[in-house]
Length: 297
Image 1: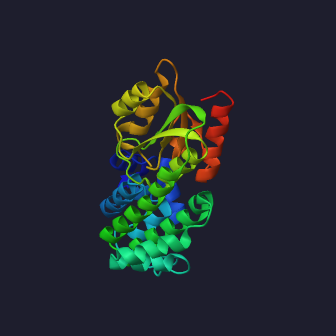
Image 2: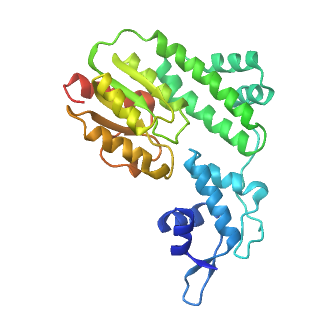
Image 3: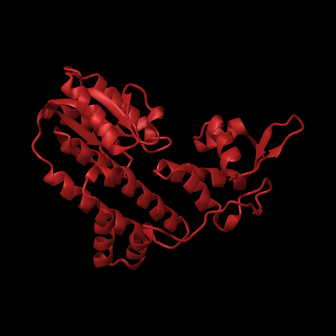
């Protein structure tokens, strides 16, 4: 049996987060020593490592827990599976049903129709409301086994194409200064980030979209070559590999002339040195555009 301090060292997950995963999601239920200290088994450590890997890959902790608790069986103290309520519920419904069917069938025509049906006149409403809802449902369908990895990637590619159309159709930049937008090394979930980049370009900003998994040295090089006025970095992993997101911020912060740094994504609070952005892509884009218009970065 291992103490929580030992488990934190073995998994790379802080003690505070381990306690939160236990209380919020019940992924593991450690035994207690006579002094009421948590004690973890080898099997529980294996589950926590899986959980950490899923979260690092960009999956929300609640969804990662649902995957690991498939069939409602979290790991108990002795390593055996125990019954628990609140398991992941399968079955897409509502507006996402058509998208889920298209992903499961790998049907391009169905996919295009599902996306077209969800696109409102204003791209900003699509980015703020329709898109995140469909991505959550797609993730739930994957967790429930209704859609495979190929289907999830297939649907994501279709969504990226739809966003690219809006990005390409945006008018010319009217605000001075270029803005880099991308993900740090090790991060690959870029659908919502690309939606933000499109909103930002539609707001009149000169956007250079770098995409996913961009090494810190390439961020630095791009900022110099494009004379970037600002950079927007999305942090979606619980523990970016080797502090990669922080490394990007630190490199950009050291540049002369200075580059304004904005941080978005579900794990933005894990990184210091940048200004936080709200979750809604259009709100985040409007905030950056206002700052640029006012002479900031």
